[in-house]
Length: 119
Length: 519
Image 1 (cartoon, rainbow over the protein chains, first blue to last red):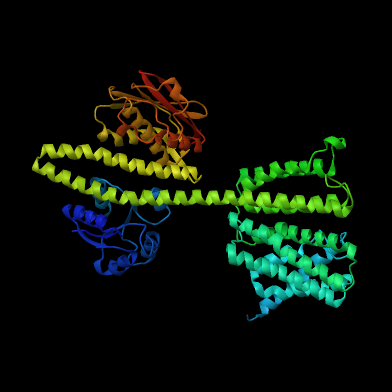
Image 2 (image 1 turned 30 degrees about the vertical axis):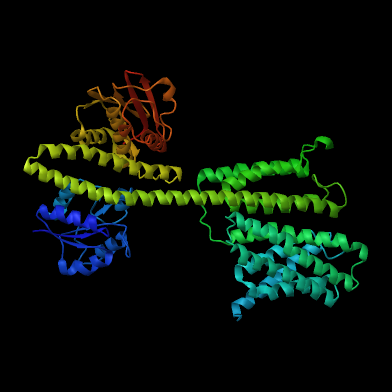
């Protein structure tokens, strides 16, 4: 079962994504900020990270940079999930592997997760 | 306050600058030998104290003392003048820091008004002390008291109004935006200003005296500068104008050359004071307005982001609910959900539209252009829209066989908007046609519907912001009137054109063209 690490400072959204993915047969863990990702990424070793950009503390872009520059974590795909209007442009300026604009369709979420993390 | 080596260096530098500019000023037709209308040191001192702090005051005192000693003032008189000039700068700087908490950008009206008060009031002090020092030391005759005092005061005042803002504004770190059209505008502006200067001050047209162009001709370009180039432009133009109008007046040229040199300079300097205050006030008010708009745009973009968060949660759980109801075969409840869903999508679109409009207003619509095969993109959009179609069918006819240099997501946005409008405004029709065509230079896309059409009266306004045609479509379906406005801005930003043809009751065709790129 693929493991997905979800990072969103909004608990409602993080709970929603967990519910959708768990119903879809994934194992999930939620964190609320960039620190949480950096702390958990090695112990949890996820197959995919779903990442919000606007968070308190370390910004999403910074988190992506740190993860993609680290040998142990650089191969974990990262999908940006954000409500920012220019999400496609922001994504192209990072090393993230894909993006999903908020609000999203359940099917789009499941498809992008399946594409990058398998089943 | 403790002094460091660098402070000492600054004090010495200020002393030298003061001395040199003071000597220069005093060499130009000084009234009573000591009061000159061309007086840079006051503005320099005020700016120096505001930028580097009050501890630079000895530089002013020393500079003034030396300058007046060299001009032939007795030591006590020179000391008195020095103390007066130092007090003027200190009082001015103190007032501006204490009461207006001056921002050196002069982008707030209160900073400009503070400067005007300082320039008129603090300078009274040094003029009074200076004239009394000279009089009591026997250097100044009693009949020269008043003219000397007036020249002293005016010279200091204009220096605070012209020189100080120039130094203060340009001492900030500016990110200068070298846009081609801005440079072009500045160039035209400079030419016009030179022309007006030549006409007004040098009188190149040699017009008869009674219709000689007035100095007030410089106001229109000055106001233009303040409006378009803000404080940086305004202070620069004020300073340059001040220098050149002084030069002309000194040579007996221009609209102020009518009496003695001192009288001429006095009226020219007063005129420059008025010019300076006008331009500074205007530039600061414009800057305040710009700042307010910027705050508004930031607010909208944050609000758009924050509004999407709850919408995301609602939409997600609604879709989860839909799945469960589907499994439980609860058709009635499923229908309720299906009625909510389009509204959630409408809400999302409205939020995005608001954000786009705020960007357009702030002139921050950025395009990431790439080579796009238009035909494929249009097919993609049509396929993506298919699941949301109720009874309409979208037919794509023709080909462009062309590439365009465009921002893919923005063009998708335009197409989605045009097709969405076609569907919305043709509730009884079944077909939406998309015609693709091309010529040597452009590709053309027509989106045709057979709906309610647009009345002749409304046609000229449909690309305006917030415009809503008078329709019988229920309000919830008609939106905010932002879609076509945003689409037209996007197409224009791509160097394309957008237009509409419509017949009331028969249908509407919205077309756009984009420049082709060669493969």
